[in-house]
Image (cartoon, rainbow, N blue to C red; front, side, top):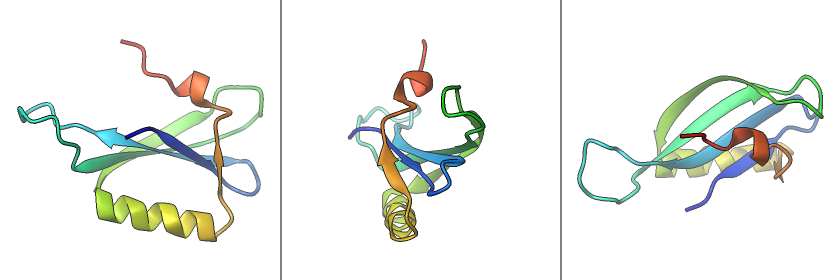
Length: 86
């Protein structure tokens, strides 16, 4: 499963949907989605991430679908800023 980033019509808010793996379990199954959200102040700068939460896959799908219906669009613009650095 890959990471998806949505941006609102005004290009001021983003939400990132990515797989959440529970490290306390030995299985590699993904049964939850991490939803991070933040604000975009300048298009050329890194977005400011305000928080995140973990949702079930079904709840995350419902939210993703609702956002698309509201006019949010899929974007790849911020992927380089949002890569995890280990």
